[in-house]
Amino acid sequence: MPQCPPPQRNDDALPAAGPAMPQQLAKPVDEHHVAYARHPIPDAALERQRRPPALGVCAVQNHPVRPHACLLRCIRTFHLLPHLTTTCIVNIERTRKRVPMLRRTFIALAAVTAVIPAFAQNAVGQEAPRELTDAERQLITEINTHNSAIKTMVGRFLQIDTQGQRIEGTFFLERPGKVLFRYNPPSYEQIVSVGRGFYVVDRKEQTQYAYPQDKVPLRQFLDSQIDLFKANIVAVAQSDDYFSVTLQDDTPRGVVRVALVFDTESKDLRQWTLTEPSGNELTFSLYDVEYDVAIPKAYFYIDPTFKAVNAPADS
Image (cartoon, rainbow, N blue to C red; front, side, top):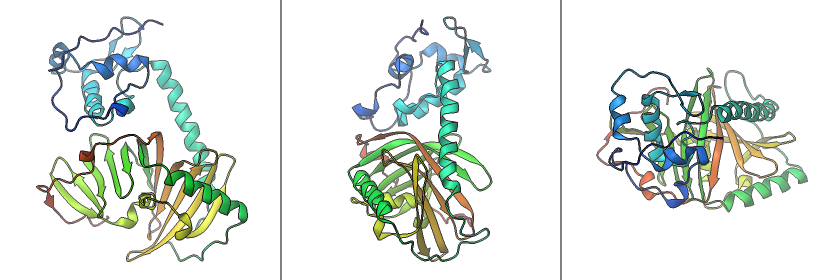
């Protein structure tokens, strides 16, 4: 199949963008992305972005091409995680196939989440620890062993709250104690842990505030060695493809639960659902995840010049 002609290389077309990416993260997703992963936007394209964006047509494949404004936004994300920037110029048929695939995955995850016991409708109450069967203990042991061997994780996440609002972003995790959740534009917020608590950083306002640790259930996976048996397991559910373990925490704000969903075959973490004391739920689904890749130290950093502010009332 013919390919879109690559733009001319111009190393001055993009501004400097923080720390250099490691070699493992520099590879494009597939051959159709090679031109855009290796070549910046030419000066002519940057000049055209000042005009009102219009939907063009690719001269080779005759499919719609996104406006330059969208492409420039993707390039900014490219600096963060180039090989996961799949929203640039892509093959239309590949995109059509990708969306149903993700939808099927989320439906399958929802199926196992649906069989997790509903502890409360309006508020979360205390539950007694669950007695595990030998088969469940064996599976949790395998999950502990598999995930303890993973030192870094890099990928995308989809966040859905009780009202159905959807937010996407990228995440970076390095054991022990380091994690970065960066939300996609137009948001400037990111959640960072550098081993001594969690913080919400607003890169636009240059502010930061402490984030309640019980609202970041992935902390269960930040220790150098993972042992879910040390947590208070109150429920277990299983389907053909997924296995869910629900953990309970007593916090100053009340009882908090998190249902961790794993792939039964690979033992990888796929999703978790956080239930707050109020009964509100927040679900994170992970995809495009890669393991044991080098992550720049600068990603786990809080600028000391950022102003410390009080957390919002709903945090």
